[in-house]
Image 1: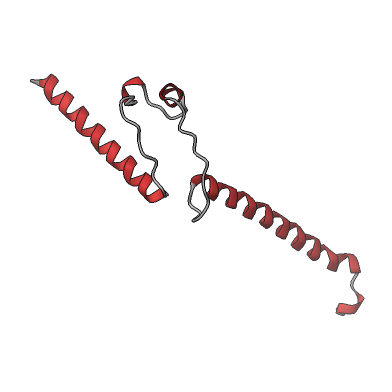
Image 2 (image 1 turned 30 degrees about the vertical axis):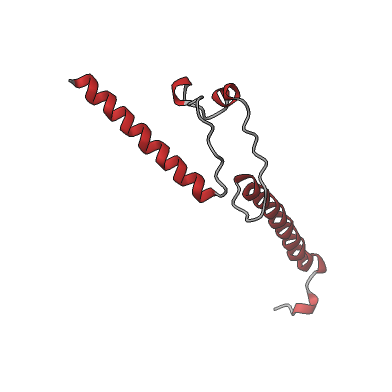
Length: 109
């Protein structure tokens, strides 16, 4: 059996290099996570820059369903935090489901 003192020094340094690489990767992930949380508005006190745009720009934006889904007559107020936005989306989905159900019921009669 070899004692600990007779090992090659290069074998011991490999662990330190791996540790430094892991710490560097962790720092990169932390920076990316911080930026993503700021962009989604989940970090308190981070003022997200949201551009409303014109109704035409909003209709052409990614995620717009169609022309009939955009109500150009009213301006939606922007919710402050993510929970309010989620509740707003839930209300909108429920409203659209009720409208579709009414259309189906009207067409069936």
